[in-house]
Amino acid sequence: MVTFLSGGTGTPKLLDGAAAAFSPEDTTVVANTGDDIELGGLFVSPDVDTLLFQGGGVLDRETWWGIDGDTHRTNDALTDIASAADLPDGPQYLPDERQTAGRELANWRRFSGVAEFMTIGDRDRAVHITRTSLLDEGHTLSEATERLADAFGLTIDVLPMSNDPVASLVHTERGMMHFQEYWVAHRGEPSVETVEFRGSSTAEPAPGVLEALEDTVVVGPSNPVTSIGPMLTLPGVPDALSRSTVVAVSPFLGDDAFSGPAGDLMAAVDAEPSTEGLATAYPFADAFVVDEGDDATFDRPTVRTDIRIDGPEDASRVARAVKDAIERVD
Image (cartoon, rainbow, N blue to C red; front, side):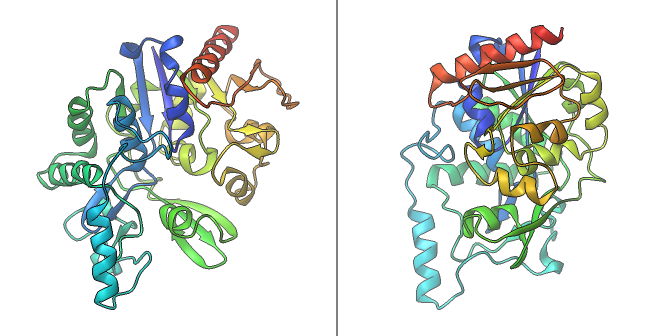
């Protein structure tokens, strides 16, 4: 049995080849929900959705988000209406008193749908409508995720990290922003001062998460701060990881992140923005998988391979390296 910690695009790319080393029926994935937002009344869970679309065979693999070949008529129409009505564009938080009206899970991350700042496809939107409706009927995020996973025919188990609100908030030179606002609307350009995972200290891991962490754990090559970090701040998770065999796959090649703002964000939380910084980010890790050209050294077992993942064959190679690292610990 193996459990992957997933967020962003790094771990999903690895999961493309995980079957080369791990049986899908014995695989659980715990997904980051710190990136979740409510946009225009719909609850969007980007890191969960990437796993749903990947497992369902409909993921847009050019972007690694959204559904391949999706149309965007609703998103386009929202932009047109906002322009014609002289309404503001860009991310717009709803007022504080409206943040949780009717749905506590939306806390700290509820945005207006006027001039929708995230491009959501029409089929993609159907998933968000279904999820939001299930939440409004009284189901938890875990229960809604399970229903959606069944609909997409997933063979792995996908668990959201928590059913409680946790928001990844980036404090920048331009003020505080939700991570989606920082990365999607502002393209990661504002200088980052620090990162906050609001709500995590009082949130509970979702049902099944702590049990899944009793198995061997793989921290995929995702952003250590905003993709993996929110999970590590949940009560009970660090202790669970300290008791399990954990292998971490580097999202860096030396000092360079493969994608996204991992370097800037690690520097903002006083962690070295490089492969060697993973020892600080993941003190519970028992072994690491790093690139064969990386000169980083650790005082724990280290397996080296070409960790660039451009397709399923690459993913299979890295997955086999992960299995090798697990065996070196065991």
